[in-house]
Image (tube, rainbow, N blue to C red; front, side):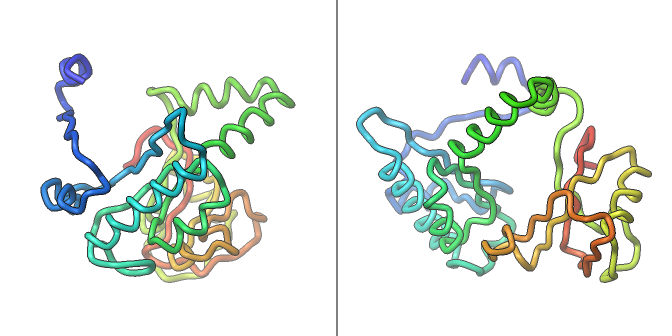
Length: 212
């Protein structure tokens, strides 16, 4: 940690060694001062994946309660992001109030399957996961359209993103974040003529060089 802190002087990096299962931990840390809180699974040789995910969900529920709400309620500006190992537990995470989660084993399996069929895709992923270059961002629809709410076709989103030197990959409907049957409001590469009722808090999924 000290080595990384010295190499990146523009960042403040520190470690707080406390038990996340203890409610007093959240009183001392006060997660509300952070924009994002990421909960990672505690991988141990003696723990199976179900137990690891169960502990992650318990921490998530405790944190959500500390922030002042349960599923679908406002937790201020703090955004919870959770790593899950098994996809079967993603429904529990959704009910616990998490907005974003990564099912690590599923993600890696899908990535490896695609690379095995199209080896050139490895170069694309290397570029996306590198520190420099373009990355995938969720950007407010208000950056692309002046008058909202408004009906907008996906092809028009692509054109608006291109004017900013970006590539539009999809659209995120904020009102559907808690709806698993609608893929939590994420529409990747929908038909070009598909029309969305775009609201000010909706976002475009774009490939861009920065988040501005």
